[in-house]
Amino acid sequence: MAPRVLVIGPSSGLAEEFVLAAPAGWTFEGVGQRGAVHAADRYDAVHLVDARDMGPLEYAVRANGCDTVVSFLQEGDRQRCQEERPLPGQIPSGAAWDINVLATEAVGRAAVSEHKRVIVVSTDEIFPEGGGPAPESRNPLPWTENPSWYGGTWAEAESLLHRLRGSVAVLRVSALFGWNSHRECDCRLAGELGRRREGAPDRIQPTFVGDATRALRELVESPLTGRFHVALAGSIPREEFAAALRQALGGAAAPHTLAPERHPGLVPGRLAEAGFRPTSLPVALASLRGASES
Image 1 (cartoon, rainbow, N blue to C red):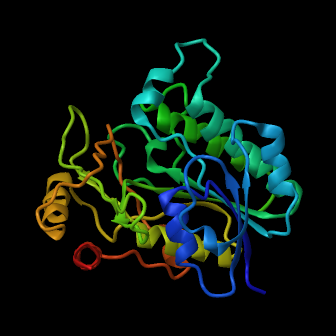
Image 2 (image 1 turned 30 degrees about the horizontal axis):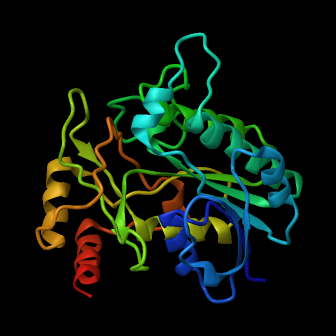
């Protein structure tokens, strides 16, 4: 039977790519409130629920016929996240904590209680600065110690999800880049990673959007549980990636500036054992060039 998927955060660019790339026969419902859902024609229904309103959010996850929940919820504004970081001893609060931690855990808790499989998109920023390529078995840095509050909130979310007794998978990605299929929305999901900050590692494994959507499909279609990484086939210097990206886009500067404070890089890990192979950089850039010329 083809999966019936509940998408949490359907206005996310990655959520849109995932839905558009899904095989024929898959059916979708959505839960979210922030932004237009450009792939709305692929959904049977989209329920308008504020992710910070836990009661309606949990009810929306429970009260549908979907067998799998894929959550793209996130507060990813790095500057806002850092501004919200609590002082030592303070109780955490703010958008990043409420959405990345509390709402994500509520989605997982509600899904598991209804025997639904749950897949959550996380980040490599859970690891400490300068950590280098990290195996899936490595423990994230606790939220109280992580220099990135964005990464710290996700480390706590992963910890809470890990305690749930059910079919739970976490997919960690690095800085996403690729092409968004709908011209009405922000089309170029590209990262300009040429900036270097003091103490930041000089190598990175960015995640091609197509790889992330394929990895999500692998997880939806399989019984795999646990934490998984997805990234390009090999790590490259930031400067080399930025230059190649500019060249692939005809010399145009990428409209988004993604200059994370630190990216330790990701490895394919157990997804490779399941048959997943990430796109090589030349193939990914060729795909970008073709999209930019279409």
